[in-house]
Image (cartoon, rainbow, N blue to C red):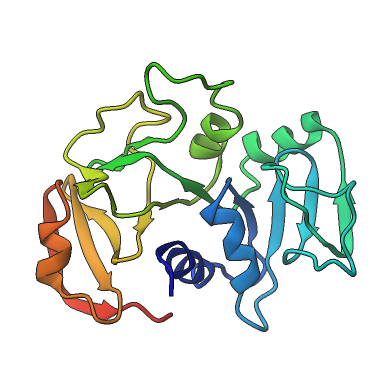
Length: 216
């Protein structure tokens, strides 16, 4: 299984029945394809959609329906489409139970950098700044390393999207919470050891007493 799929599958296990969930670009959006059977999640896209489902096939693809990343979506019974003002009223009003966002870096104090690399063009932070402070729960979905360098740091080196907002970080190697200003290692992926995770994590890590195997 590829790293991005591992992360997306594990992210989907965080969804609770009845939750309103906003998914960011890339890996977070992919998690919509792996929502467990019987879990009724109301997915929201900040471009103005509520209650959409998995990625369409060529048989049910509608070019007029897309998520915030421009990827095609399917609408479920009871779905609603609306303007940006309404969408951001939902977010800023605290009606989003959880948001899942991709990241360039995360740090052990729960900060996240996910919108720009200095010197490279970026159109702006988009809805991330609203989601990071407006959602009740914030999950970071990130590949553990890039070119062998850890993306889980003591302090982010890139411009922050928000400081100290993360509740959970999910990588292809592990799941982390936060405790006492450090990463809290809660789960490791199948076939991955605690020692490997520690070796590939630049930030300080507290190892939970009951580290579990990631249920993917």
